[in-house]
Length: 247
Image 1: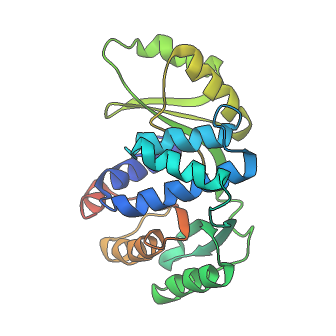
Image 2: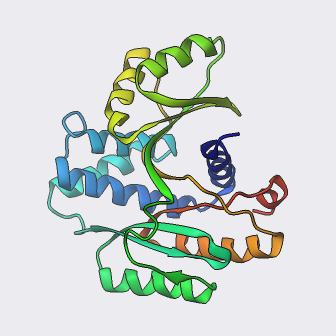
């Protein structure tokens, strides 16, 4: 099993268990707001906004909620958000990369630093984890009956896919960051709509933990994910099936 497969499985299973619907919607609305502010409020003319809307629909966000968020930007009523990242280590040498969207940088860095300190980790300098995480495009597409996996894989590779996996009712596609747009175009050509598509940070090395250490580090991950300013948290834990079941 490749490194990405391990990471993808961990993330997918944790996501399937995540019941923090309100938190998810808050983060999605922030992404829609930033996308609309930076590239315009028309999804047809703004690829980042189109992607944000697509991902929001994939998480079952109501259409009127999405439209309301975009209208706020168009009307000048939306909050002024900034994007920032933090890098550090949890206990047992687990690498943790945090992406944030905030309207108050001082509050966010204080909260992130406090989470690391409380759970036995330490915040590092930006760039300190560059050698551990690769930035790649990741697409999750629901499988439909009658798909020819071999033929579809060849088509996706032609569109720039580095890795294609069929598992648990989903097609998971990974591509180089620079091929992200090409991959989106290929999916449109094939009539496939991703339930989730984004640039993610994929670990190239993993850390295995005993159950006690796993529980401790997951408390840090959960504390960060519970923060409204935090959009995404990436880590390089290689969890066992038994450890994943505890989530």
